[in-house]
Amino acid sequence: MNGTSQTKRERRVRLWVVIAGVLTVGACASLPPPTSDLQAAHRAITQAQEANAGRYAPEQMGEARAKWVSANDAVTAQRMTTAARLANESRAEAELAVSMTAEARARAVNDEMMRSTKVLIEEMDRSSGDMP
Image (cartoon, rainbow, N blue to C red; front, side):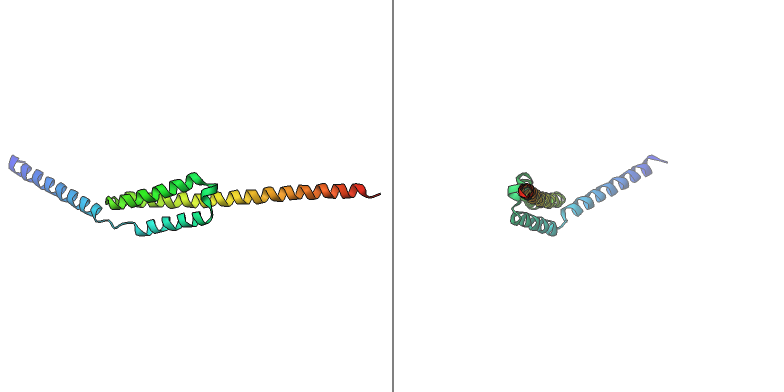
């Protein structure tokens, strides 16, 4: 192979590399905002607030809110992949907060039932001791 044909081939390879790079950058820049992910995260945060998750899972609620704000900031900065990831993480944190709230409430109900059962057993023991 002579030097001229090798130079032409190198130029073609470089041209294809440049074209591939431009197409890759163009594809990344044209991603639409993750609107559905942001809406799902917002709905999950709203549901968590309605469930009073801020009382039972304040750290998770704080994380959910912070990641939702960061996701919106990423949209503004045209970082759509990052925005989608943060929105999904926000939704997951809010859902975790709801689950932790439900678990805490169930534990409280269970504890109250245990106390009530104990009181009833004590009353039954006292009543049965009074009989001849």
